[in-house]
Image 1 (cartoon, helix red, strand yellow):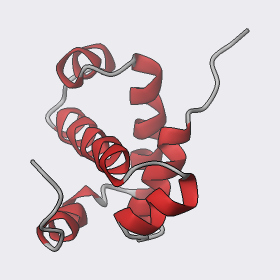
Image 2 (cartoon, one colour):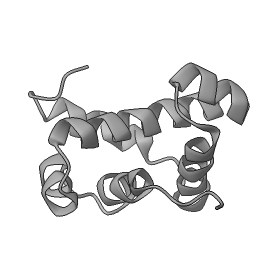
Image 3 (cartoon, helix red, strand yellow):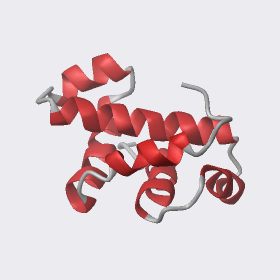
Image 4 (cartoon, one colour):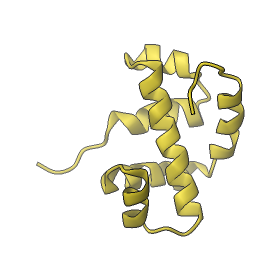
Length: 99
């Protein structure tokens, strides 16, 4: 059985591309807000690593997620540009999201 797309990419798409809130995405996907936050933070880390020129393997090691998930996040970045900068504003407006 080959690799499949993860729900994490869809969750990141909802927050990053569609602009849904953490809370709405959590409700829509039946995940906790903490899980949605973790996925989006991982996406941000992947974006930063790739922007710095790290390879997929290096990024996987640094962020501690699978290479296949790095490729999924990279696909979002390549297709929609780096919208990660706007995420800083989103997290600043949520006092209950821990960093």
